[in-house]
Structures are given as structure tokens and as C-alpha cells.
Image (cartoon, rainbow, N blue to C red; front, side, top):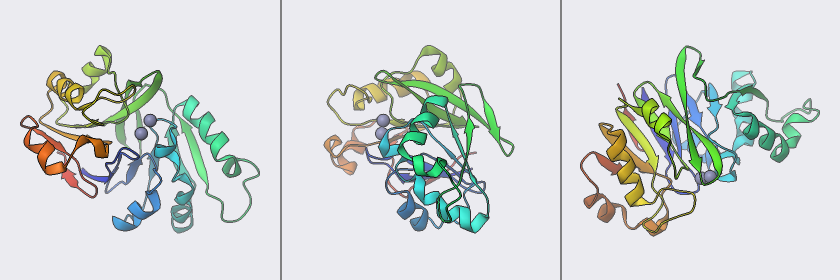
Length: 229
Ligand SMILES: [Zn+2]
Ligand SMILES: [Zn+2]
């Protein structure tokens, strides 16, 4: 499995998993990211939560609709689906106007599910008071926008080789792990390799922050690709 970090800044946190191409969230730069990474086929979109920095690029699935001649499968929990139906009402109301995005909404819960044979385990976490899903796919686990991970979800993360986790900034934040909290969480989960994402400019310069990170932890960067066994 190849994972590409499409965006790692605080307004996005988006990897795509190639071969079968799944994208987690469609941020505001979704179109540019798909072009930059030459993504010619997209099989599904998974949403972590409905904040705009994770959904606002949804309109641009249109290009894949045209090319693949199919509605785009979109996996999300009920609350996220409801929010998307409000924010992108034109997609869902009288959707027979040519050129509109076409999505095939598939409701998920915290129960594991599969997409074309790929098993996916949702990882419930909290983003202040908002429930958010991370996703575990084999040995790869992705958690953005969290400041609390329950013991139950830590159990689901056990044995993961690669962890992606949000680490916003140095100062404490109401809805994201700061750097110290993210490092402490990695120490509990103990993956082989960790990449921090959803990074604020307030975290500091990439090279300088990386020097002080414990072994096995790195800051992700846009366009970075990693192989996961
Ligand atoms: Zn958020
Ligand atoms: Zn966010």
C-alpha cells in the first residue's frame, strides 16, 4: 500500500492510498492535489468529519464522475452525511442537471467495513466535543483532528506499523493535540513509524522541529509518499 500525503497543513490532512485509490477527506485544495499527484482514478472518498477544511473540495469529484462514468462512493457517518447534504445541497436536490457532482453516499458507523475487498476499521476519536473517525487500513492508521483518544480506540491501534496523527502547534489547543500531547500519545500506541500532520505555521520550521522529535516520529510534508507493508 502506498500512502501519499496530499496536504499536511492545519487546513488539510489528506492522504491518498494508491492502486485502489481512496482519499480521506476532500480539503479546499483537493483538485490541485489530484492534479499534482496524477491521480487518474479515484475509487472512494472517506470522511473523518464535516469541518470545511475536510469537505470543501467535494465538488471536484465531478472530474472523476465524467472519467469513470460512475457516482463517487462517499463513506461517512450519519452526522457527516447530514451536514454534507446541507452544505452541498445542490448535489442532492434534483440532481439531474448535467455537470453536477454525483455521489453515492454510504453510511458507516464505528463498525469495520470494506471497500472493494479492502478492510477498514474506523477509529473513533474526539475533536473537543465532536466525534471524528480515524481509519485503520491494515498496518496503516490515520487520525486527524483529535485531542482525545479513548482506551478502546488505542486498543484498535495496537500493532499498527504506521501512524499518522495530528500535531497542531506547541501551545495547548482546545480541539487538537499539541506537539507534546501527540508525542505522549505515540508513546502509548508505539507504532514503528509516526508522521505528524495538520500542522500549523505556529509549530515552527520543519527542520528545527524534526531535530527535537523522538526516534520514529517525523513531520509529514505535502506530496510525501510512504510504503506500508
Ligand atoms: Zn476539524
Ligand atoms: Zn481540520
